[in-house]
Image (cartoon, rainbow, N blue to C red; front, side, top):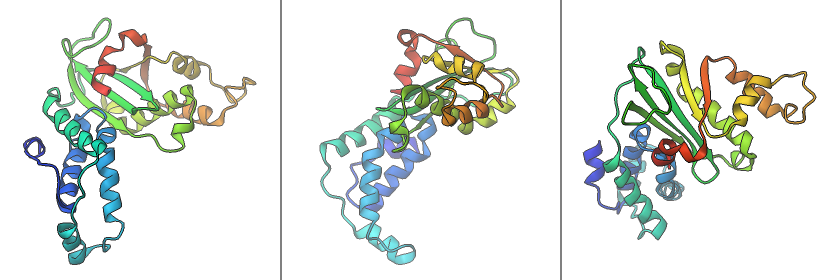
Length: 238
């Protein structure tokens, strides 16, 4: 799959575009912010498919015969960035439930949600890096229109919920408690203090209340990492 992506010329037919976008989506768990990188090409594919027959032979014929217009600078850049991300992607290892798992999460309106997971056979003091732990996944998600309207704490909490849902099998099967690093200190305070009986205006935010009650079902350690030290998440997630 990786070789197929690296050997791609810019798609000239809808079928070729579908294949390229499909390959990037197939590799998305190994590419930081894959959803954001491929977004301009995904949007182009969606537009070209609007008049397409629903399915069957007519659908296949339409894809083969429909030409892709010359790329805009944004589309060309997305294509090259996707290929570069595949080529430069750090080596990843299989998840081992006996190892210690560490996750850096990140949420921003520009880049969406991202999570970088590492594992080590021994506990790590300080902050894990690819030098002392093995990368096991890169996850990413574009923000919805509703999420783009969240204020920062809501966005960070939503990002944590998204990660827990995506990686629930890791959280529930790993031998040791997963350690999650975030550069938004308020998340930990909310998880510790949230209460349906609280009169705090923040705690009356039902979206935050529901999210915190959901998160409190799971066993993990949340640790604050100062933004200037959140180098791994910044490098791998952006």
